[in-house]
Structures are given as C-alpha cells and as structure tokens.
Image (tube, rainbow, N blue to C red; front, side, top):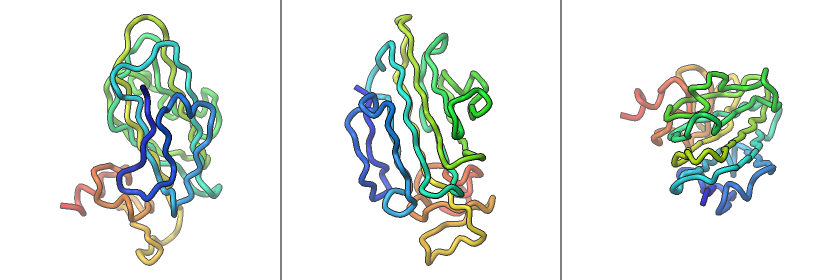
Length: 183
C-alpha cells in the first residue's frame, strides 16, 4: 500500500499512512515547522488504474519547491510520474523528457515560476507495474544572504535551504554542494 512518511531530518507534523488517500489534497511547506517532507509509493508493487494528484505549496509566493527523485521504478508504456510547476498543463511540465516520467532514473528539479508543485502519478491496467518511487520535497529560500542565525544554509549555487537538510544524504542544493562540504 502506498504511504506518505515524515522526512527523516525534519520535525514535520505531516504524516499519512497512504499516498493514495492524499490524492487531490495540498501540503503546505512553511520553511520552519515543515520545511520539507518525503513520500513514497514504494511498498511492493503499486496499484493498477491509479490516478493520484498531490499539490505541494510554499508558504510565500517567492519560495520555490525543490524536488529530489531518490528512487524510481515505474513501468513505462502508460504508467508515469508527472511533475508540474504551478499549473497542471503541458507547458508547466518540469519533467518533459519521457525518460524522467517512468523507468529507474534519479533526478533533481526546482520550480522556477511558482511556489507550487503538482505531482501526478498515473498507472494503467496492462499488468506491468514497478515498485514505485521515493520523492523528497522542500522549500527553497530566495534570500540575498543565507544566515545561519535564520537556520539557513547557502549552497554553492547561491540558493538557500533549511539548515535541517544540510549534510543529510540528499542533493537538496541541486549542485551537489553537500558532497564537498559534508565529507
């Protein structure tokens, strides 16, 4: 059964036992008590004929959402993971390359136009399923300086993330800053 679980490093208050029970809902990341979360659809084989849309929003319009696909095992030929920046339309699709919608690729995305990401997972009924995916999401702080006093960490690419995520095993900065800083 798909599940949404808490982010390991965050003191998050969001938790739900089943991702499919969160379909058509919105999770708000505020940067403080909930700077990020992760969820998976990866407990064995996922269900056929699933169409689940989950919306994740930053607290302010200037925040951006970071998306890290840590694991993906999605059967191609109909099953797919679609990730949109703000609106659920083709022009807003962040993972337009079909190789990032199914298969086994790991990758990193950041919303560029909005503080909202829409994640849609669709499976058909062809009998071919994978073991699902693990997606990590967090807010990105667009501030000129990243003050440790404000609990922020400055990446080499000049983006800021919550210091909670610094030196965990994820590429939150998108530029592998943690590989150089956290040895």
